[in-house]
Image 1 (cartoon, rainbow, N blue to C red):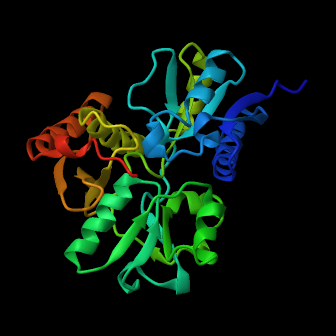
Image 2: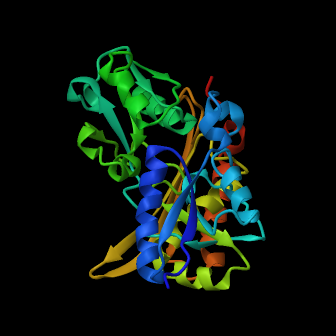
Length: 319
């Protein structure tokens, strides 16, 4: 007799369905059970407001978590950067698989690079974090650009460029890779130019805390280095008391020496949306071997950033 299918809750977008499908295949391999996708519409999917205006935090997550609580799905897949930094006691992130490319990328007209864009170029993004860093880069390099707030799925955003409404749009490399559109990328933005969102490129596989068997099975998909990195990044975000729509970038990466991983470096940035002010710092320490050590790394950097004036930049929102 075939075992009952596991129900995976997912948003309906093409990207969410693609990344949930990848996790479904992996879970099916680990458990030997079929996995069916259960499509759920979230507030973030139906609202036409800009994410910065509706708060960002949790708008793509709440409906999935409610379906878990009601027992309508067995587990859910989230883009980790959409998760609020506080974790409900009744839910557990059972797996954070190996992270995709965390960088931001540009899709531009005429295959131009960021540095090749003409004066007055209009760049679309729904992210105050991207606006702050792009405008800061433009200021420091004598460029004349305009950042334009946009919303919509990958097709909609790239369409603005193809239809000539915008000169460029900024997207996450991970999302384009997962939907098979990476060939449309015209410029990979260095993390020295635009630091990604905390957790960008990583997925969170969440289930109820009382589902011990499923937690144990999902744990086989977990990547400890990715978990340590995103935990440090999200700890920084939490300590800054900022939501996922705030102009905060963070990236933890592993520093190697010879054949071995030596340390973890955590970089953080907070900026005013106009790019006039940036607080950008980094810290390096031993690779965290516990959740508490990763959290401490993030809090340490946040404390330094707050001392440099980061608190005054967190209220920024895109208009």
